[in-house]
Image (cartoon, rainbow, N blue to C red; front, side, top):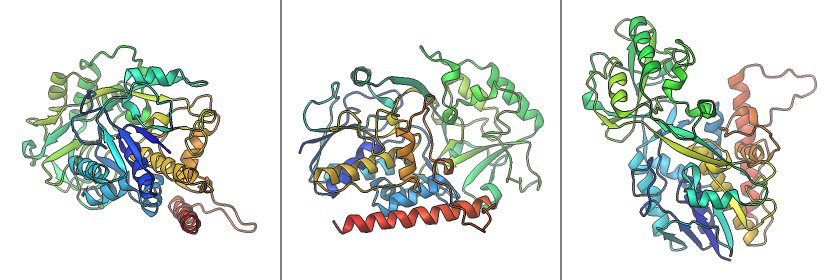
Length: 439
C-alpha cells in the first residue's frame, strides 16, 4: 500500500517513523529546501519555528503527561528532545538546531522512508495520504484542502519571540534563577515600577507590522503578541509573561515589580529566548522597545520576532478520534493543522496517526486510547462537535477526571489529583502497548 505524507514537520516525521518502525514504506514530501516560508530558517526537517521549549516535563502538568505517554510509545520526537535537551528548570527545552538535525538524519537514513524535497500542491489521488503541513501550509495546498467535502479552512496568525546573544547582556542587572528556586536555568531581568510602566507604554504605542486580512480579535490566546497583550491594560503583562511570582532578586531578597525571563536556546548557552515575547513589532521598534528591558540595553538580536500565518481546519465532525477523515478513509490529517496547539501535541497526533494507520494497513484491530489518556483526550477534542472550535493545548480539563468512589471524598489537592490522573493514564498506555505486542 502506498503511503504519502505531506509535510516534514514534527507530526509528519513522527508519523513516518511510526509507520516505518512497523515495517511500512513511506514517501514524505517537504518543500522547505525549494520554497521556504518567512518563519523557517533551517534546511532540516522538524524545525521549531517559535520557542525552543516543549513546556513542562512534570506529571502534574498535562503536557508532561503527554510526553511521558509518547516516550512509552517510542516517539521519535521525544527521543530527539531528550537527546538534545538544554537546562530549563522543570520544563523540557532543546537545542533548536540539534533537535532538528537529529530527526532529519534518522528520517533520511531510514531505508523505508523516502524523502522528496518538493512542494505538493494537490492531494494525491492514489494510496493513503497524511496531510501534516502544519501552520505553514502553502496557499496552493490550502486551496485544495478547503475544497474537501464538509470542510472549512480557517486562518489566523502566530508570532515568534526574539532571541538574543548571552554575551551582549548586562549581567550586572540580570540574575539567574528558576521560579520557586527550582534550579537556575533562566535569566531574569527585574523591573521596578517606573521601568515597568515606561516599558508597557512604549509597547502600547510602538509601530507594528501590518498583516493583511488579520484581525486583532483573531489572535490565538496562547501565542498573543506581547504588544497586543499590553494594550489590554497597563497591568496585563505583569500578570502574564512578566509576572514576578516565585522569583526573588538575590541582591535585594525581594520580589521585583515585574520580571522578563530569558530561556537558554542552545547547548552552548550563547543564545537566549525572550519568554512570552511573541511579537509583530517592526524590527527597529523591537530593538528600541526591548532595549528598555534592564540588561538588554545593548542586546544583540540573533533573531528578531516575526509574525506568520497559521492554518487549521474545522476538525469536529470532519475527523474521527484517530485523525482520519470520516468520509474519506484514505485521508488523514496530523499536527497543528488539525487544531492541536503546540509542538508536543502536534507530534502526538502524528504518533497516533502512525500507530493506527500501521494497524489498519496490516488488517489488525486499531489500538484505542481512551479519554483517560492525554493522547486519547486530544483525539477526542478534535473530533467532538464544537461550534466554537479553536486550537487547544493539552490540558487536564480535556482528560477524564478521576472516578469518585462511594464513601470517599474527591481529592481536593490539585497536584495530588493530577498525579493520580497521570498514573492512571500511564497504566492504560502500558496496557495498550501490551495488547499491541500480542498481535
